[in-house]
Amino acid sequence: MDLSFWKGKRVFLTGHTGFKGSWLCRILTNADAELTGYALSPGTEPNLFSICKVESKMTSVIGDIRDKDMLLEAFRKSSPEVVLHMAAQPIVRDSYKEPHYTYEVNVMGTVNILECVRLVDGVKSFLNVTTDKVYHNNEWHWGYRETDPLDGYDPYSNSKSCSELVTSSYRNSFFANGKVAISTARAGNVIGGGDFANDRIIPDCVRAASNKEKVIVRNPHSMRPYQHVLEPLFAYLMIAARQYEDISVAGQYNVGPDDCDCVSTGVLADLFCSSWGNGQAWENMYTGGPHEAGFLKLDCSKLKGVYGWSPRWNITQAVEKTVEWTKEFLTSGTACDIMDKQISEYYQIDREIYV
Image 1 (cartoon, rainbow, N blue to C red):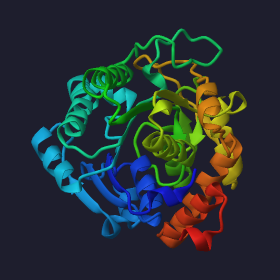
Image 2: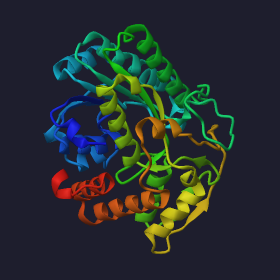
Image 3: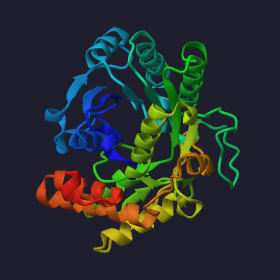
Image 4: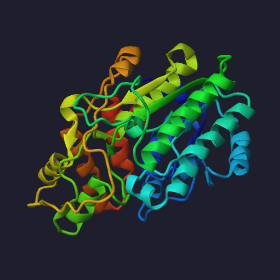
């Protein structure tokens, strides 16, 4: 991945005010991209988008992905070359509470952004970020491949499966001429500093540790492909940049950790408590709840084979980086320096060059 590719590139990013979006904004603005973001206002307080102080370095449009007219207006003004679609309702349990809204955002939101790409000339590279949960889950102990059937169980997972199918249909129906390279990236669960969302294990750990309380773990045996947030973000940038120059590499790609880093929620809580120190502990408070996949792994051999990609930080390092970020933020109240430090460490270049 060569970040110099992004210097001066006109980039349109949906979902920029979210956790992953904020990290990506920090990367792209530091790389001197001409970035336009389109998303709802941040959904938590505090929130990483405000903390990472990127708004003055980009065009930030606060809007609903379901509002096609507003989205198209922002899109035309941006005149992007690269489009990264990350806007979503991302929480499984919330999708049970608000299935209609979840489908509107995750399915029609994808239709709306692809309509923008169809109607506005100039886009060369489009990436739709979905999830590892798009697959029909057989609870088997090997990784799902991009050729395995799609059929998410819960409304969130199913809506993202639909988003994959929408993208495939638009690729075949409107972009078969090869003018726009179109890919989807199916990423595993991400962790990292600055995630303040509800109903996620690491934010729950951080809140408990900050309050000197035990972490409540609702299902310690669920197995997930956890990875640091920078892992998929750099993979997204790699895919979008490479297909911009060579459309033959466009396609569907899994983005996840190696098998040894696919761990249970209980193991992840152990790693967090060990890294946090101060006698931090967790307890099992499983009380049932709506269906969620129990065992989920990804086979990322396609991404490794086509792009030569491989994860850089194992799960222990990912947790340590999360704790490092969190303690810095709790101490200083800011996070820009620690974000740049971790981005540079991941990117493996001299920080002075990057910043």
